[in-house]
Image (tube, rainbow, N blue to C red; front, side, top):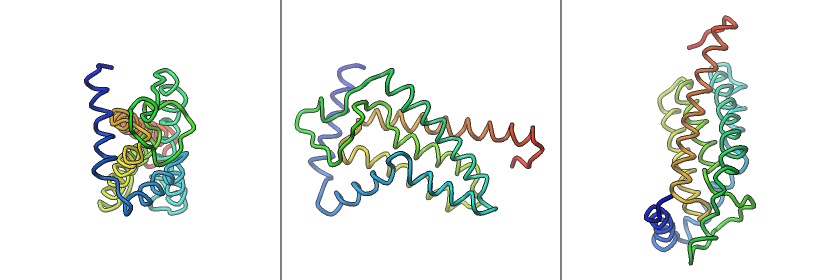
Length: 185
């Protein structure tokens, strides 16, 4: 990665730490980012969707998308790239949460959030639900920057992988539905 991009990545995190962090927002973003641990927030919502006939497809497709995202990020890319966490390389950066995985790129939390949001945007019945999904996913990506555990490029890559996995899960769902004779709206 070019040095200017690495410098910009670190600079953004230091700016967030110095300008945006405050006693009011710190606990909110800490709790929100921890809700994304292991994709739990998105998994729980997807399981709820599975229980409601009108949103069942959204639950199935989002779980498929998150599984694809997990394979791409945590199983493959993080180990192939091996990028250190920001606080290990950005002098003065103080993380607000502990991360035990030393690999930073791409953001798994962001990937799971955007994989679910991408699937939900294709399958949920109402516009407000789709907008809410995108806003929550964007907040998850930002929370990873706010708490200092990912670089901006980690979050952007996690978003891209998540969007791709959401699209791929939708394509797989449509093919499975056509093959099985289900309605593939």
